[in-house]
Length: 93
Image (cartoon, one colour):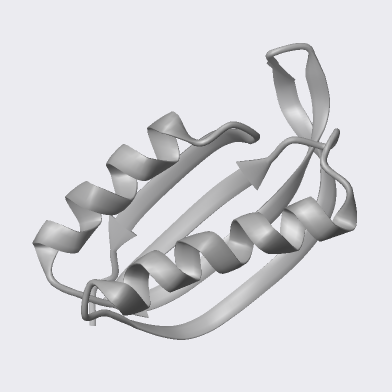
């Protein structure tokens, strides 16, 4: 079980934001994982400025997957425009 938090650029409109969330959910499903919950926390102020942004759209994905999927997900996060920061952690049961 994993938990993935990512912050999407506030410059994205609602449609692009939803498309970005759907993209990562689809990557998990396509690679044999299962998204158990998607928590859209919405726009929030960042603790410090990142790439000239003081706000971001926070999303948390809870999912079950193999460790190889996590490496692929991390790679895609790094090359996706509009994702300011991301963090993937394994949940302790």
